[in-house]
Image 1 (cartoon, one colour):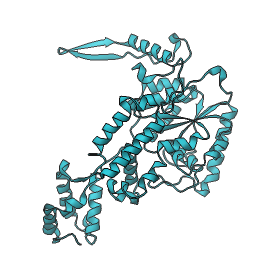
Image 2: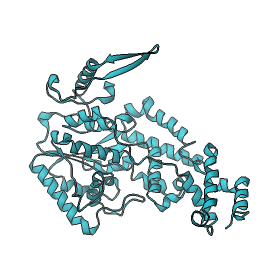
Image 3: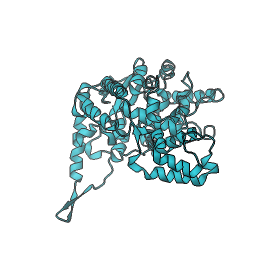
Image 4: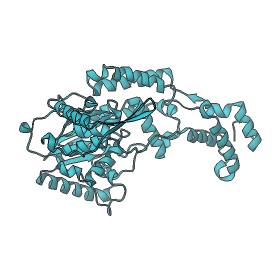
Amino acid sequence: IAQLYETKLPKKKKEKMVVTKKKILVIIIVVGSLILVDVDLAYQKLVNLWTKEMSTKQVSAGDGVKSYDDEQESKKPIAVIHVGPHKTSTTSLQQSILKFSKKGVLTLDNFVTPMLPKKQFPGPDWKKKPYIAQCFDSEPGIDGGPPNGCPKKNRDRIMNYFTTFLSNASNSSSNVLMSSEAFAKEGINVTMLKDYLQDFDVEVVVFYRRFYDWILSFYNQMAKNGAKSANQPFVEWLETNGTIDRMEVLHTAAVYQRFNTHFEVSVLNMHRNATLILPTFFCQNIKHTNHSCHEAIRNPTMPRSNPSTSLDSRHFWNEITIRYSSMNFKRKHRDIAQNINDKFNAMGDSIPRRCLSEGMKRNLLDLSIQIEKSVTPPEWHNSDQGIQSLTTDFHEKAMSKLCSVDAKAILDSEDWQKLFANEIGIDDNKS
């Protein structure tokens, strides 16, 4: 457990540490009996191990661990900028940051986070950071992403607020913490951002999720956002010429390269300890977050946001709409539509699927391995958890999650042809 956290603790004497005094009880079932074991002493030993672990840490590409010497640090306050990318637990992290801010935990660590006024900028507080980030963007919004939050009519107000916020933070020697996946966009003017943050020592954090897993999640989000390109099943969309190239520039390695030319960048590997992302972020990737680190250790679970959902039914109905364009099932023929839904849902696991071609599988796996090697240290990607685990996981998902419903095969089957012939008098694939 100690190795999972590898975290820092306050420099106060151990007997004065700010740690919630909670009894930790382990329930062990032995021969039908419940034994209650008080492991408070074990917890204190674990704290001691954590303290020792952070004595000397080296910067290593991709492992998110950084060392520093208080006596040699710059007198500037620090600005920690989390830059996503999309679909790497960004919303969950932002909700946790907001929670820490409202509880006063960030204040105890001398951190402030920008918060646009609610009256002028409605919407969830954790999603207002993209407004600021998108003001540094020179290009339109990414396909399927949120609308541009920095239109011309709002730009001056947003940037005036951000300028004032940074000035106040610098004058009070307060550190800044900011998270927005919008910073991962290719058009972000990193030089401009550097100018705004010139009074701070900037630390950029980018999260890493394996490319094949990430691109499926990104596609799913586009579909939920109503992107037209996601009307195609995933396999067809992925195999469309240019798709992978367009997506690669939004992924971790490309984002890392864009920011690494201007700032110190660390990579948080989400596969290292998937359930400990919050403690890893606050305890390894950021300096001077002792209270936030403790809070993250006590409550390591982040809220789950934007989970992926099955798109099988959507793509099945898209194909029906294309074939029988003159039949408005869901308005004019609701009873028939219900029969179709019932029959489709009854197929369960027997739904035919179309999986990636062998050539696409090779390309996607090779690119995923290449990216993992570029953003993680050798001791990671050469370990059992690294490339070996990636390859095994990829081959499993290539036969399951990375496949799409084969709607054409379903509708071409004799069984379904009979259903349409009986229900609406159509005995071929034409409307």
